[in-house]
Image (tube, rainbow, N blue to C red; front, side):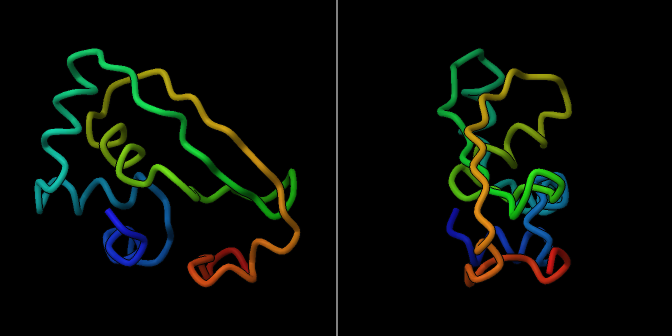
Length: 98
């Protein structure tokens, strides 16, 4: 899943829970969901926030994040979180966070 598709599935929010509805409609990640549901570990999600107080956005792992949300059950998630005050300069940074 590239960022344009992820952005479209989320309606521009880049929130994995918003993309889960797109997943349910398109079923584009069935294989990934099956692997996660079978207990296979997934690589860490890489997220970045503008500050400690701002919400993070997924920088790498959007498909994994959507698949985890689509399962609607608790799965362990490893997240590597970084903070960059220049994050809003990123082309895909959601307007809602500016």
